[in-house]
Image 1 (cartoon, one colour):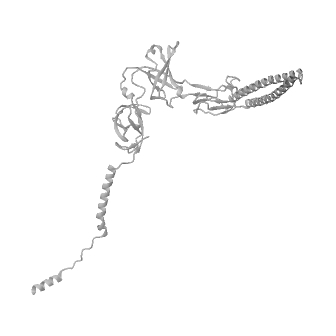
Image 2: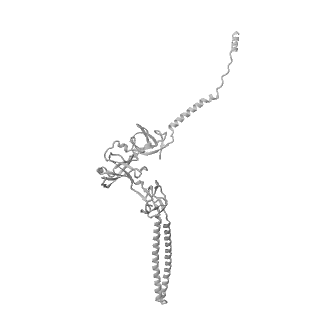
Length: 409
């Protein structure tokens, strides 16, 4: 009994405790949310690794061998850029300029109007000739009608004379009238032909008041202004212009150099030439010998050599100073491979000793290490790393990497 009472007293002394609170809503959802985010991150990584990405659009250039190079320079010479096709455009007749339609630097097509002369007198002559042609054709029509009537009258009188109803004199008079009208018809036909020729001549004279470009080219000089007189020959004490403008065919530009006749045996027609303009000394222009002019200059002991430019460029202008190097056949040039393959400098990445380009291969960018040589203007020589036919990516965009999917025109 005493033990039971003691236990009861001890239970009475125990301090009652509150039951533990239930878990909060945040704790109930945080662990499932964390698991979902982890799964999403894994799926995103897999998608980035294995799913195809959008192709990057780039520009490419196909590697080709340069036309110049391959031999050592056997002779250097200097000269000037000249145009084989150049003309001072003038008028076939003397007249006052009404309009000039060109300016320096303007490109014109063959047959394009460059100027117009005052055509009042020529137009009046043309209108007069056209009126004379109309009059001549009218007279021709009248004569044809009269001849037809005379033919009918002659036929009737011949029938009456055959019956003995008219005299011989009347028949002869009808015959003479018919012959006169036949002769007049021939005269009228000739007059119409002459009038047509006069119209053609006056039309040609009027057309010559419109001055056209004889060939396609670029205007390098404007020599006349509206209101001035122009003539195909100098007249008027120097106050008459002899030309409207100077036109140059830029496709006909070449380099002319004088070669000392003592070294002429080193130059051969068709031989390779490396040209450099004085204005752009670091730009090497591939060229070739067009012809050796078969005449020597007695005073200077030189022979003129024409050098053709193989790569046209807007920077090449008439009368520019140039230096050329004639390349010898069969002589090795140190670093000749560098002169064979050239690409745009924008394709080259990295720094000296660690340079590379991106090559398009099977729709993807392939990083390729290269060794670069000298730079010629906007292009750079590639000593190793590229072969003819490779497609090099120009101006590689930011983010382009090895193996990236690319697309190009």
